[in-house]
Every structure is written in C-alpha cells, then in structure tokens.
Image 1 (cartoon, helix red, strand yellow):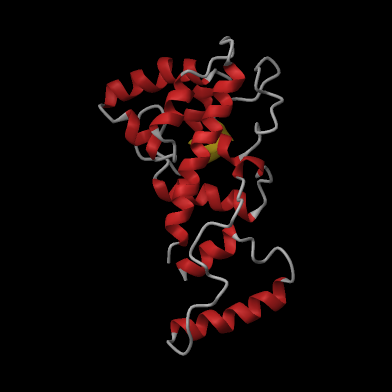
Image 2 (image 1 turned 30 degrees about the vertical axis):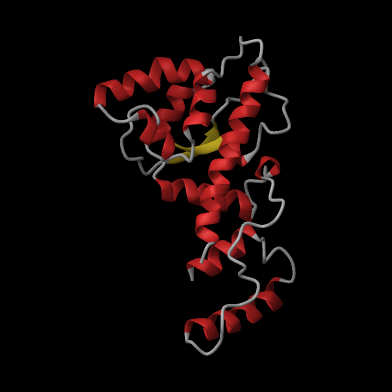
Length: 202
C-alpha cells in the first residue's frame, strides 16, 4: 500500500481520468497484494525523470502535500528548541516573504522547497526575520538551553548540512543574498528527492 501511495502522489497518477484509473489500479494492486499477479508496471520504483520540485507551488497539489508528508514523517521538530513538534502546525516559508527581502520576487519563493511545518510559537518567533537572524538569535540559543542537536532538528525538516549552512547565512543585507537563497533551494531539493527515492524504491 505504501508503494502504491507514494507512486500515486509523486507520479500524479490521479490528476486525469481519476475514476477509470482508480478502478484499474484497485484491481491491479489488489491482485498484487493477494499474490495473484505481479507488481504493476506503473510502479517503476524510481523518481520520475525530470522531476523539478522548485516549480511546485500549488498547496492543493498532490506533489506539494506529498513533500509535506515526507517532512512530517521525518519528524519536523521544533526549530527553536529541537523538541518534538506540537499538534498545532502551520505551513510557512523558511526564507520569509516580504517586500524588503531581495529574494521576495524570486520564482522559487513559493516553492514547496521553501516551506516546512512549524508549530505556532516557532512561526511567531521566526516571523519576517532573515534566516541568519533567526538561526543565530533563536535556533542556536534555544538548542543551547535544551541541549538538543541543531543538526538533528534541521535533518528532521529534510534540510541537509549544506542547506542548513545556506540558511544560516541567509541575510537580506548580504551582496549575494539571492544566490544564497538559490543555493538553499537547490540543496534542499537534493535532500527531498533523496527521500522520495527511498519511498519509491519498493
């Protein structure tokens, strides 16, 4: 069932001809589960060729929801303290959107790669702060109080060391601020695609 779910999401299998496709898939997957047939051919076990998550901006789409589901499954710990996330979660930008931000009009601003799950208090603390300000004024001191690992916390949001470094240097006053934002998005795409590959390798 996991194999069917993740392939359905990341191959956007039910974007068209939903009823017909769903019925055929039900029969094929049921036969596979019961041992009456082999693995359906539309479950290739690999990431769709050319998948570009930088352009996934529609919060109602299967792809956007699928990425957020992966982040939730990874843990999405409290970004300030490293504690387990609360029950009241919000979806918000990691590099904040604001007219004064040099990356505000970038085509990747609304990408799912610039989004994560935050509890309400963390989102309030983050606000419109530059990532570098939030990282050094809130994240590092917060983890210092709890003794939690900053690396583990960022990893639970599918943010690798390279992406975390870009986040920590993400200042709107930096001359290369847009390039830093782009580096963050590219690095996080690698992290998310690696997680998708794990889910599809069934």
